[in-house]
Amino acid sequence: MQTTPHYWIRPGAAVLYVPNYVSVSDADLLYERMLTECSWQQGTLSLFGKSLPEPRLTAWCGDVAYTYSRRLLKPSPWVAGLSELRAQLHAHLPSWLGDTAELNHALINRYRDGSDGMGWHRDNEPELGEDPIIVSVSLGATRQFAMRSRVTEGPRLSHTWSLGHGDLLVMYGQSQRTWEHALKKTVKPVGPRINVTFRAVKA
Ligand SMILES: O=C(O)CCC(=O)C(=O)O
Ligand SMILES: [Mn+2]
Image (tube, rainbow, N blue to C red; front, side):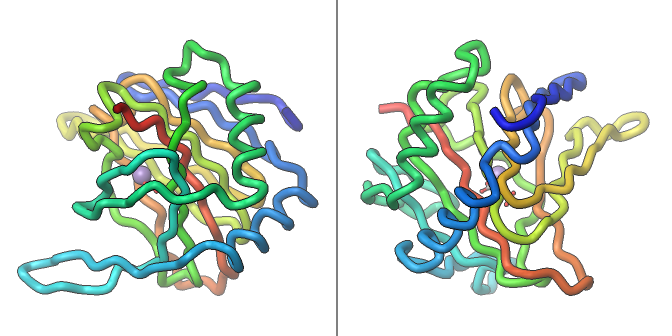
């Protein structure tokens, strides 16, 4: 690992954050490969009975199928560079975090500018099992990744990370039960960003 891992623990949430986990040169190369080699799609979301384009583009690589946001993502070959990153993660991540040796799917989101983002949600699809591990690697422009507790009595716990080029953030433990997360939109001028979340999809 390039830098010191930080463990952030709150009631019901646990995060491992490693800034600059991927070196700048590897991150540059991976960004370019994903940009050109991934098959980018724009999903739709339904809001108040209307169907709207999602404010981001999506691609994926996976050994197995995964149903995400009511869409079936079929198995798809790994982009060069991403399988090497996965192997590195398998070797580096401590097994007590969760299913760290079985990251068999990568969901890839591309945020073209500050008007792209992702609303509050949990990564709690049944295929991910109880208390999933979500291993996120960010590339490109720095963006704000926010987490907040779903417990609304009393002062609401929250935290925001600035995720930059090469940063690793792992959500584990009960983080997908009692907390939710979002990638904040911004009116500030920001460049494009690609985020990969490795997931362990159960058979
Ligand atoms: O872009 C990010 O940092 C978060 C993406 C995310 O939450 C997801 O893919 O489920
Ligand atoms: Mn998520």
